[in-house]
Amino acid sequence: MAGYDPVRDTEFKDALHTIEAIPDVSQTEPVQVSEAPTKPTPTAYAPAWRVSEPDTVQVPMLPEEFEELKRSSLNSMRNDSTVAQLADQEYVPQRRATRHPAPSNEQSAVVAQHYNKRGEVGREQREFSPILPLKRFNNWIKSALIHRFSTGASGESNKQNGRILDLGCGKGGDLNKWEHQHPSLLVMVDIAEVSVAQAQERYKNGKFSFQAMFFDFDCFRVPLESQLPSSILETLFDTVSLQFCLHYGWDTEKSVDTMLSNVAKALRVGGTFIGTTVDDEMLYSRLETSPMRQDSQFGNESYGVRFTSLKSRPEQPFGNQYYFWLEDAIEDVPEYVVDWKTFERKANEHGLELIYKARFDQMLADGYELRPMRLLLERMHVIDQDQAANGVVTPSMPMPLWDVCTLYVGFAFRKMESEA
Ligand SMILES: C[S@@+](CC[C@H](N)C(=O)[O-])C[C@H]1O[C@@H](n2cnc3c(N)ncnc32)[C@H](O)[C@@H]1O
Image (cartoon, rainbow, N blue to C red; front, side):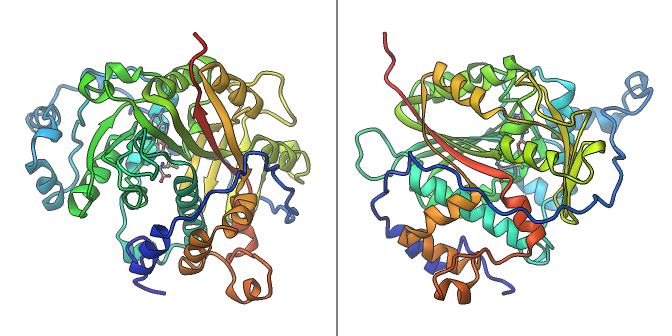
């Protein structure tokens, strides 16, 4: 349906505003999905990036580069004209409200470079993406998580006036989803500064009822308090969201601890930490049954996973790297297996208690039970309507794309009272 925008669609808004009671789904066990036969990955691994070109460090700065550097030191939060500049000319990297240079590592630089390179395409172009059904499904999943588990300001029975922290926010694709929760503040953070600039532009061009602030730094390696002004942090957040990002930061125990400490310190008691990431069980079981197991690979024509050396489950919970590609989205970017047991244990150590975890196929089944989410599923064309009429909830997408969806899990934790 060309031109259809599930997020702006008025019927969608009505659907979300009809909020129903949330059932207790904390005991839900993920279900098994049947495996589609995996096909060989068509492209061999051939990284096409490097962090810096040889010798560039020694090249003297040109006058125009110097001007660019001066521009990049502007604080765009205080300068409305920067967004207008962005609209008129080719993108010039803007420094977000970063207080001092944030240390990061080579791994993060590769991820940031990948997302910085991926330009924003318009809504019409997005409609032609070969993975559009998957994008719609993922958007529905995030809407469902936000709808069910985000929290509003403490003391309010509805979800309004929440202070939201969106870590790994990307180009701001969830701005509209948050609008439906009527927050008071949304703070967006991402390591890819071009993405953050695009999110900021999207916010300025939209009609949002909440205040938003934008920052670029590495939320797995940098403490929040070194980047966010104390005026923001002195009132705690009601919800922290980490969508499709955890698997980029699972390289060391230290980076996971830094991220969890950022989340836990930012959240009020009773506030929620929600997110989506790759399911470790699915990664390993697909690897173990893959015809390409000897090459540590599996996938199909829509996606591919290639472990750097692994052929079965490792002992150590951190740093288990693989490369992931997804048609029309991700070009062989390094990710890490998120060891779920370790994640849950560490989150607990940081005062976060698991209230929901389910693989995306189970989330579809759970969401279908909730009327607003079911209406949204239908309006976003996520499920096969004819099958649904016969009582079968089937995603409306080709099997190779569904194989990608069933690799992921959604989760929600609640910040506990401290014992002291
Ligand atoms: C798959 S995108 C998801 C974007 C957005 N959350 C969404 O769901 O549309 C992953 C995002 O995580 C960001 N990211 C990866 N590592 C990060 C880090 N260490 N700190 C902050 N952001 C990071 C990437 O730059 C990218 O924008």
